[in-house]
Amino acid sequence: KAGVTQTPRYLIKTRGQQVTLSCSPISGHRSVSWYQQTPGQGLQFLFEYFSETQRNKGNFPGRFSGRQFSNSRSEMNVSTLELGDSALYLCASSGDWYYNEQFFGPGTRLTVL
Amino acid sequence: AQTVTQSQPEMSVQEAETVTLSCTYDTSESDYYLFWYKQPPSRQMILVIRQEAYKQQNATENRFSVNFQKAAKSFSLKISDSQLGDAAMYFCAYRSVNTGANSKLTFGKGITLSVRP
Image (cartoon, rainbow over all chains, first blue to last red; front, top):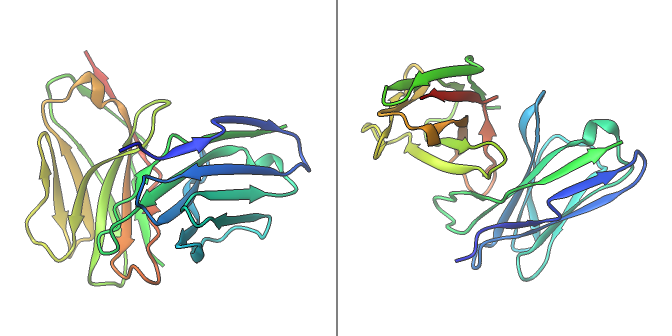
């Protein structure tokens, strides 16, 4: 099985712009979670989608949003980018409802100038 | 809310030696999962080992084992016969078993492990 894929891998934006990141989960997985990783704050949970519904949400401003499609692919969007949004954005998918082991993608490195 | 603490930001080990990475957590839940994830430089995060809180037996995966002390809320990772490929950042993580309401992973800050040849 192919692993979790994320596109693009690298992105450079300027303040005020918006960005959309994409995540394709492992085939058959219905849950997709997003995390932000920064040197200062570490790994922080953004949100989780399961069967096209947002199931959990972390403590991030409304500029961060996401969605999931019927094929389980997920996108996250960040509007009005700020310098502090520069981070590695990780996507993780899981399929087993009970255990819910999460498999991570390689991440998208976002740099905001 | 649950918290995970990794108080040692960096550790170093000689190749073929044993190293223990520490992790403590705080929760009011009685059942949960604990994980150690490995993130090599510029590579993706992979699961090293997991522990179900209701199991008293410590989990083991080849050279990796944990020391799970539920009462002390401690979850350390022991790496035996360290190899150069073990060099990475290691994250301790917590997850509730209540999958419907709270399936997110809560991570510690991570420990950077270097392996000396």
